[in-house]
Image 1 (cartoon, helix red, strand yellow):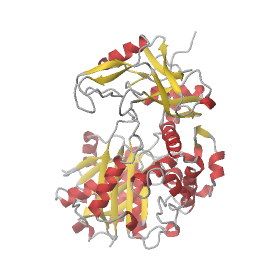
Image 2: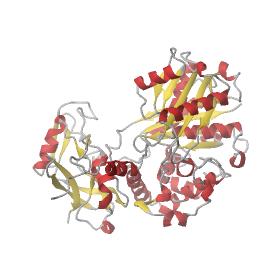
Image 3: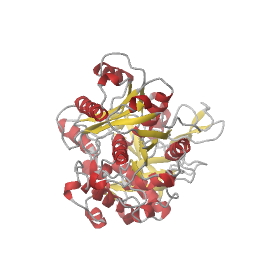
Image 4: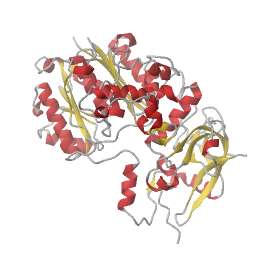
Length: 394
Length: 140
């Protein structure tokens, strides 16, 4: 395994304001994010020659329009996927000489991911004459949606490993603590919470309570990955892409088998093993991580599949506090998807936070002497699509 | 006048017609590969295991056990007035790599549902929509 280490770096990152309702459109929020990342890097829009869309419409035709928006001249690379994988693929493609500055971008305004989306649609059309038709095996036919789906995963995990709910409920407590140290987070100003607060919050889909569930808000972000040559002239120190990997399996919340949680691992394990081998670092070398944390069970399974603990022990790892600032694997120091922001397709924000940590820009939530970070993106089924990037500074 | 059904329904794709016709006849069918014997849920045009396109819509006895479940307290769209309702993943013990099928539970006390609980498929004809859907009920 020979990943082209230190041939490309993250040179610019930016989160727009994250909030329940923002002015603008997905396009204008993404544009604001791209401009912010360009300023962060000290680059111009005409320096971008590759695009990786995280937009809800990431089609080739939509990306063409973004190429037109960003200078109206030919670019040389497009891709799509989730953020950890997009960073990795951008770095590999830059190392191969096909492109120089890749922009990963997302913006969302007014598109809810949770059940309120369908509720609003139902209320807007008070006279429903025909039931809406969806693909034959769509989980919406059965009244499922994301929180209910992760509730099924949580219940299975708890039963298979005799994992107490209270262990998993420690994760929202950690995430909220981190958010209190992040002025940009949605929930930080509400203060810290306890496990009892999580248990006392309304039941959404058993065993998940409201405080176990992701936020559902607007926002945008952008990430610029550039060649070493471009990076040396950028405004800030480069955050090198040391390694990475992508994993993909199963369909969009439709197919399941009884090996859902097994010792061999699934997409996240594949992506992680490739990433760590390519980067030439071990799990013990990681100073800080950003991991897609849409529900507590996702975090438990993340650290198991990434190899930070054994399968079935993630809930204990959470309970023991290792993910908290000051612990051995500080994770999602911005507050993550439960307490910072879930803007719809938010995996890029885990990259943004790890980059800020490695640059030493995190103020009250700074991990001391952070030199090597790991990012895990996941989604499109529980651990269906996975992207890992290992990042480091000089 | 009864309320029209306002929840999402399957589009009943032509390639899956034997499945949907089966539900009308109170039969729950899962594609089974004639070359390697693998059961494939959800259905795809070729077998996941050997890529053969020689699959039959094999009849099951409609009986399985709960792999996982949740009691939904906040329902989307047309489900919002059904809460609390039970959503279950049910394993059909037909062979290696057991297919798991998602469905809502009916005729059940939510507090009595547990992993491993024996269940059976039950059927609901949706009036005016030309489709039958499946649910699960306790298999006493």
